[in-house]
Length: 304
Ligand code: SF4
Image (tube, rainbow, N blue to C red):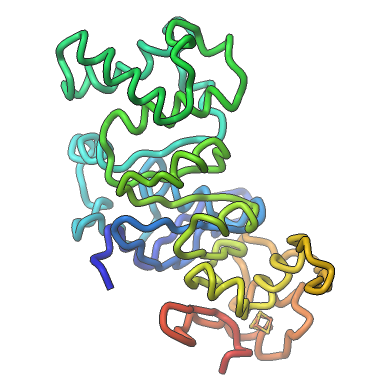
């Protein structure tokens, strides 16, 4: 096994609400090895985006450790973290609000090169901007256009080029579909790819982590997860992916039951209300993540 670039240990992010603490991310632990891509999947509100933001400290974690190359970034000062962010970048779904409307694409992509003094010569900056535009699939003729002249897909690509300009080691991609083709040509980078769509990450993720209501409930190498989905929620997610061959058609598992509230959730399996196999134990005890085969982790009493 190669060296982990990122080790997330017991990460928690709670938000205060008038009704009590909302457990957005609750005791999440995983690693991503250098050069690998982890797909993080789950429905809206499962905590996947909050996990990505807490790792980069765009929001402060409530508890836990985030070891990046062995160093806990949660303990870094604001200034140390600012420097660390050249190594750890995030790409958003539509970065429109973060793109200065008065700057052209070339200026936007060149900014991180200038600010961080990565390339100071103007001609070299432009060469690098052109190279980055090509990497992310932006035509050269767009170099002097402004963000509002472009569609959402192209704006995503500007965000990706801007992130790549800093030569990061690790990129969190929060649902930007345009990052897919860039990340397939991985350039030795390590990715955490957040999406609600399991079929999207299947093709390029080395590992897949499934989240449900703030908990990581299953993680496995991609092929293993698709071949042996073990948590009932993962099975339901997979059953929703259409298979082209009629011979292999899966029966769609429709989830019924009320979703457990993430505010002060009970000590129980958070999927119990919707799980067809739930027992009394599931409603009174919380299952822990366990390794059931090499690299395959599941949090469900059915594996006992
Ligand atoms: Fe279902 Fe129980 Fe497993 Fe939770 S622990 S997923 S309720 S069987």
